[in-house]
Amino acid sequence: MPVRLNQPLSDTPNADENVMLSNLQGNILKGHGRDRTAHIFLRFKPGKAAVARARAFLRSYARKKLMSASDQIKAAAIFKREGPASRNPLVNRAFISIVISRSGYTALGIPALDTPNEPAFNAGLKSRQQTLQDPPASKWHTGYRGELHAMILISGSAVLPTDEKSALVETEISKLVAAAPKAAISFVGIERGRAYRNANHDGIEHFGYVDGRSQPLLTEADIKSELNNAGAVNWDPAFPLSQVLVKDPASADPNIFGSYFVFRKLAQNVKGFKAAEENLQTQLETLASSAGKTFPKELAGAMIVGRFEDGTPVVLQSNDGLSGPVNGPVRNNFGFNDDPNGLKCPFHAHIRKTNPRGDSVALGATLASERGHIMARRGITYGNRKQNGGELQGRPSTGVGLLFMAYQADISRQFEFTQAAWANNENFVRPGTGIDPVLGQSNVQPPQPQNHRAGWNDAGAPVASSLFANFVSLKGGEYFFAPSIAFFLKL
Image (cartoon, rainbow, N blue to C red; front, side):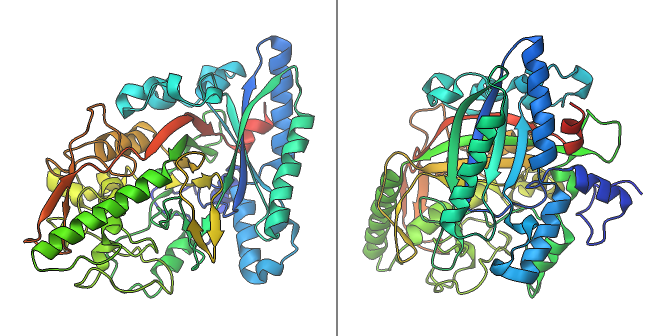
């Protein structure tokens, strides 16, 4: 039976699905879950002999190092059974994957019929500046201004102590650099990722908010875990495999797949963001007080992001806008049906802008088409911040940010639509909404301000009109494709 792309992966894959899993790179259907990473960018040198050596190296490296989706699922099951004390080699090994850009396919001499064909991928990220309202490549970090042909992701073990995880990553980098033929491959640069966690062990980004919670789930096992004791389903986390998988054109086998991969280095001005957040909080407290009301602490930031720092969705709050700290899994089973006017969660809030959960149906979209834009995000923070008792301290204005990464079946329909039609669109979901205050970009300077309500679920609350934006900036990136393992083995 062929791979069933119109549904999530079954708990009992059939023979064809097992072929798919053994040839699919890990991290696509499910995040690798490691908290120390390195992202090594390569450029292939020209010339027949150099290309032959580059292809031979990739073939050998992939055979020895790549972790398949099948092995990743097995490792997760072992870890669930044995826990952090596991010494199983599959659990303790480094996770490694490889993605290749359109220019990388060309540099390797891959025939057109064996090369993925998607408009945004073919054009490359630099050429999409106008579509995405990105800064020009001349303002990116130096290493990103030229061609990037491939990226190798190396992640530490899931169970080793932190220092040993980092050491494992560095050891694998050293082995890679030593083994790669210098006459055929040059190393353009390395980005190192480090996951931060709050006191509840949830991953957080540098602004201090739980990140990566709302993901499309692509396996029945993950979906069952998410919906356990959820009661009525207000948001369906189940997505079909077609959300991320596309046929790998380099293989004649109909069950061999890959996925398009977006990488963007996003710098975060934490000092500026937190100062603006505090200023907005003070402004809204003053407005509320003038109307004889109170404005709860931390509500301004929650209305900017759409969640409180602990991940609690602002739309689920009690009448005063605060319901206490999270002591269990961060809630994700919610929608905006009972908040049609944005009185609980503003239309400009980051999570509502980038995952409108039915909002665009009122604009003529179907829920299925809206869900079709969602990506499988696999990002990780970069840069160091001081920590004290699990809480992030210090407010850097430079040197920290997010390595945004996402898998999808169609870059134009998923990443680019989300950024251009939702996050950057001042009139989505309603006229005058403003851009996404976290990721939004606008060629109109300054962008129109957002309207911030000095009350939660209060239509009569006074409103402050001010711009909250420009605390995240693009420093480089590229569009890639994650080929099947079968692709590498036949190079």
